Image (cartoon, rainbow, N blue to C red; front, side, top):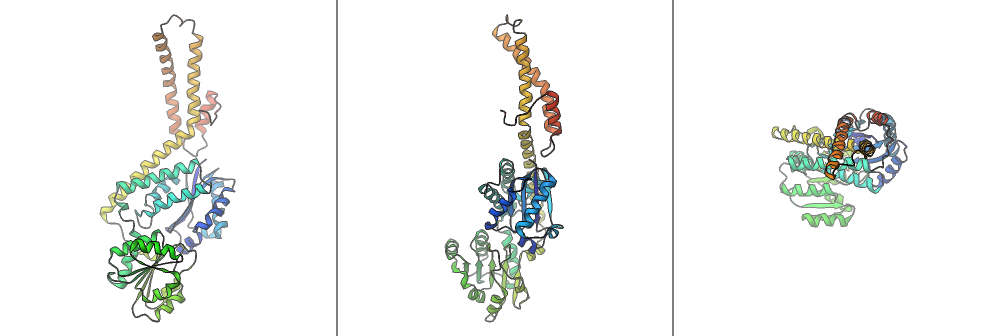
Length: 425
């Protein structure tokens, strides 16, 4: 079945819409059941990150698949179809591969070359597999995308800074606080991004770091690994009163740091407080931005301040695009070969059967040949048949695009009177 991707990303959607569309871990089982209940959808993988929500699926047709995937988004996320009209994009067949491979390589990220997306794409396939939503078509596609991402990281310098997103936020924080050396820092969250934040800020020479999390055990694990102080989320009010910089990176579905708590914390403060919110959905109440003495830096702020890449990075970006193109071509060839394999096997069997029939017909006249002579005649006959079939098979591969209606394959099968058994070996 052909492949269709439907999605929304930071490029065309406001953060509020991305927040509403994002899938938390607890949402995925229901979403996959909804997808597989659609007649037009055979397989599906959901990639939901800070910057994008995309569903890649093998579908019966473009139109039916588009409607089914759009219905899945609106019904599972509670978003009106009219809200998706402007930011929604779709990619069909090879364009879907082009897009996914570029995403896995970090070329479609807010920070070009960021490496977190590669793991997120890989984990998305794993989750789909656990929900029995992925099959051979999407598994092959996502594995190929993963290979493109690994090559882009290994053959260019784009993946050299996995903390690039945190780094941009820290740069903006230093505009308010000055050099971050010695600053008192709190990190809310204990997941991957929180760990990256602690590591990056340690490298900047900050002072004490406190890790807060709803699960105190998770906070202790990250704190022990990074030399920070663990705390439960109930200690957030006193932390806000004493910290210079608070980085929030939880996976919560609602507001974690509300305006009331920040307003209370300001009562005993004498210096500025910077809140760096790198979570989607956002952790910090947007109303915080209106409070005196507060600098709120969120994903939209970072997006608006992204600098143009340095000239020396341009070569790496160009090389990464070449890698993506190479891996897409490799996937197309493999996909085309897999799709045509039953017919090609049948064509070759037809040639072998014709040769065998003619050799049997002339068996009496060939009876006087020595074994070596007999072998030479049979090799000659089979070689001629193979050469005659070679050009039609090559032309068939060149003209049969994945996801097409297979008109060239059907015509060849009809002309040769071949009935194709897809399971035939």
